[in-house]
Amino acid sequence: MIVLLNSCGEFNVEPIFLNCQEELGVDSGVGAKLQNSTYRVYYVGYVSLLLVAKLQSFHRNEFFMKIIGISSSKREESSPITQHRSFSRELLRFGLEYIKDKYSDVEIEIIDLGKYKIEYEDGAYSSDENFCQMDYPSSEDDMPLLYPKMMEADGVIFASPTYWGYPSALLKSFIERLTAMDEISDDVSRRRLQGKVAGAISVAKFDGSSRVAQDILSMANYLGFVIPPHAFAFHTGRLVTSVLEDDIEFDQNYFARRNAEVVAENVYLMVKQLGEFNQWRIFQEFTHPLSENEAKGVFDLQEERARHVSENRFLEFNKKDRGI
View 1 (cartoon, one colour):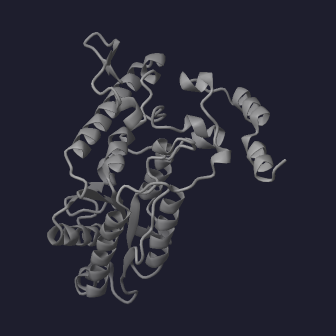
View 2 (cartoon, one colour):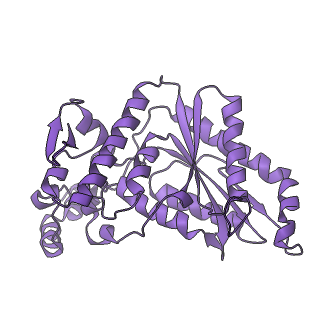
View 3 (cartoon, helix red, strand yellow):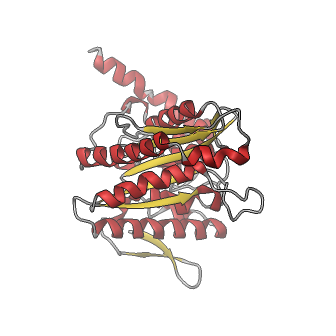
């Protein structure tokens, strides 16, 4: 069941797919419980995009996959500020186009985060993990447009420049907001990133690019991504040249270009190897079912804290494991 708005702005429930709520993990009652008009527009748009992603997956055969690239540099030639191409995006493009040309059962797409409005993580997870969900988008930005793209992807390659030894703030914000896709739930279908395959690409002027790529993969693995062998590529320029000479260094770096192709191919091969397998284990004793109020989109910190303490599922699992 999917919640939709009619022309009068009222909620209607249309039986578009009898099993759509279960398949997509969308709570059909959430929208009707919340009255904020701006939120309703975002929620309905988000649900519609989820439906499109599901429809597209129905049309694929079992051997077809989609691998997307996430570019987190705002550098581009058309920008009056940078007036220059992004090297991390270039390597990302090299890799994705390589597997597209080599294999007939893969679709590729590059998503430029700089073209979307992405707000910072608001800390909802730290207050109540149940409230950090896609069903309750807390920020009025473009993340509801990006969640379905992540759901549709079988593999994701994250690309970032190196800024002061770390990934770009744009990529970090995006990854933090992906927490809402990986709910702390006993229901594996609500851990929407679990089992997807990740790779990473990074570039730097003279230092830090390999560490940035590894940092990206570490964050991805926390979110449930599978990491294949040789899953990152990087390019490092030279300290002795000016930034205006970097194009020459980059274009001559066959090593970085070839490694980007290897990363993309290994992501492809891992997706192929895993197939439909998604029986990975999680710390289920840390999960808590939604309370009655949470199911309505209402959160009260003190109330939920008291409930969690009284239930203490971790203690229950611990006693069970020890035969107490």
